[in-house]
Length: 363
Ligand SMILES: [Zn+2]
Image 1 (cartoon, rainbow, N blue to C red):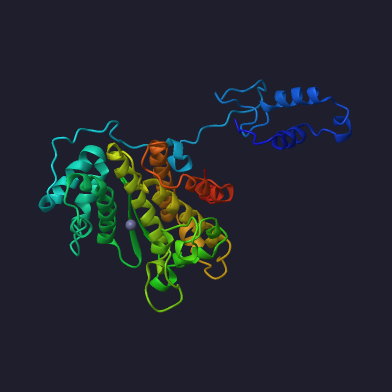
Image 2: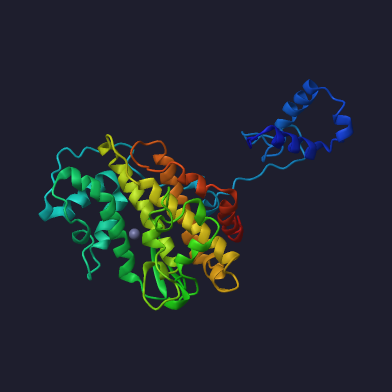
């Protein structure tokens, strides 16, 4: 049942349903009006004539809606194995000289897909995802605080093993791997636009990049939406939509890994939920810009990411997994800096972008 936000919502629903004439209404007493409003709350929600148990409320000619069991259509259907308790790690010890074994064993106990990400990331031969991001970690407690970064970065390195300018490898979840084409920016041989351009949308002012604001601000934008998309020097913000998907996937891993060591939080917090929520917000904003504002300048962009089955599946699978861990971690102390970020992602006009993908999926 849909909840009504105010009396005006109730009134508009009431009038829409019964086409009440305002002249007649003016002669009704206040008490009678409220009685009738209450009577109609049952049938005026989003579920129409079907109550929360799925039963018909009396009209036998109305067919019951069927539950769409395609997980891409309904994030509530997504789940994956996750240790339901904080498995004991009191027998473990950390040594900087054997950091990979520590992070791998810690993840195997607390976030098993993290161990897979470390194993696969370590197979990338150009750089070492553990060694590169483990500097300064000397003690056990410091290593617990670093494991989510190690898992995140090794996840990237797994992707980098297979990527070139035309292909992007997305290891989204246990058993869900996709290789998609054309998702980088046009300047980088793809069909999308530089992700830094989403700074120009009307969402940005709601949480401005910290280099544009002295108040509450988006510190991720300085890293992921940086640079000038039209100069000749490379900055991370020049990358296309493929890297928004890739970062979003790894920020889900960051949250999942941090959730796995949530017993380390005593009197401090991390940005585990902030990272994934910010990137979900970027993904929605990018889709909206591709479909509307920049559709003329980059006519192939929206088709490349929304109408392309591979990218659509990458987005929806990532969205579903993100909400699995956001719901799991909701209210867990220590995993969030800004509790207001979720409201940006849950704005109706941005949720509509995800709904459009579900429609294209045939949901
Ligand atoms: Zn990253």
